[in-house]
Image 1 (cartoon, rainbow, N blue to C red):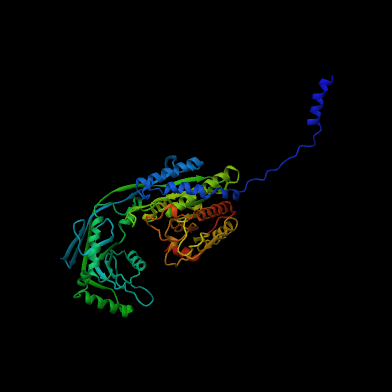
Image 2 (cartoon, rainbow, N blue to C red):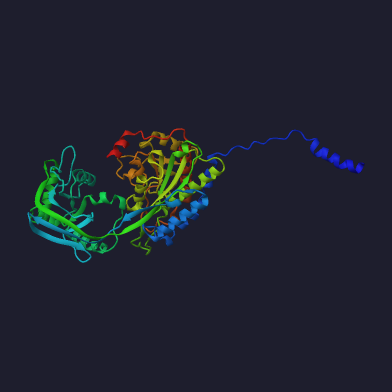
Length: 533
């Protein structure tokens, strides 16, 4: 009996004598807990791949950019983001026109008689150099508009310019005003007299011979009809411009400049009596490029239809003029390898939070665009062909160059320039400030955050293609440094501590916007007027 009682007593001691079972409550995860998953080691590893020499500077249309696209798509597939591009991929493809210009021809008429006929090609240089050309023949009278001044005291565009060439002295001309006048009056184009140095013009024309027979600038194929009608801009030999103005030579041209300078308000545009026919020989060429689109669906059954778009450009300028070391590969570690890899790690943190039950209410789209360096082409394509409706896009956070310190901040990377934000949407600005206070607490500099800033950064990166459609945006930017658009923009120049903090700020700002009860609204009337212009 004793031998059987011992196990029973043991069971009573082990189980029967215990008190009530203790319940331990585990706190639910907060999205802010995942900010620390963005770290310098991971960022460095991915940026080292993206800015490697083997990608040859990631020029739009190049094999190197294709390698970058494949790398990013593979990373997002591994993280588990949804591919929302063409045919269930991470890619949104678009076509670009990249014509090969063989030659330009310029025929100047006096009445119906040929006054001068020259061309510019690999073999020839004449009296004009085309700075910006279309793909249509254009002809029209030549009107001289002085310095092209238009303000309260002077209007040197006093003639009807429709279908005409506007010749201006360019050293004082306001190029924005010139473009506005050409566009509003549907001018054929502009003829720029850069200075009175004929030797400098000849040198420019000779150097320009090298570009013929090679692929030229890129333009969006679906906008080709619009670009064909854009005004052409030619640079004119100053000695030849003097002939068109009926002057004896360069000294008289200098005197004319002084006369107009002395009293700009008294000058009115004059018809020179000459006309110009501009033509070109072009071989068409099409290049296909792609944006990267990766999606994180929100958790709220209603708000998940609204999207916060995080954008960066993953292209750079490719292979170009070598520097003093002989390096000709422009790796673009900061521009915009830093922003691209920063968003990659923001996406990783958002997915980690989602898996832990702390995901955002609204959805988030990661958008890496190509063709930014060629004129914001990829973001223009996306904004005109959005995967999620623009009206459901609550904000755009654009990231371009966040891995360096600029000339103004040599001793610390604890800052970021914010462009947009409060000059567009007070609500977006409040969320950004709150996110910064709850996370890295760095300086949010508004030095360039001015619609009248001469740098015009508010429309010089991909955020502008959202802003023009009324989407609130904030542009994160570290400023320009000595390696901007040079082969020396390398990984070893990156401030990884600063890049990590800035990426963490973008993560927290995304979380703040995506979880807010109300979406931010554009409420600055000045910005609204700018976008209408």
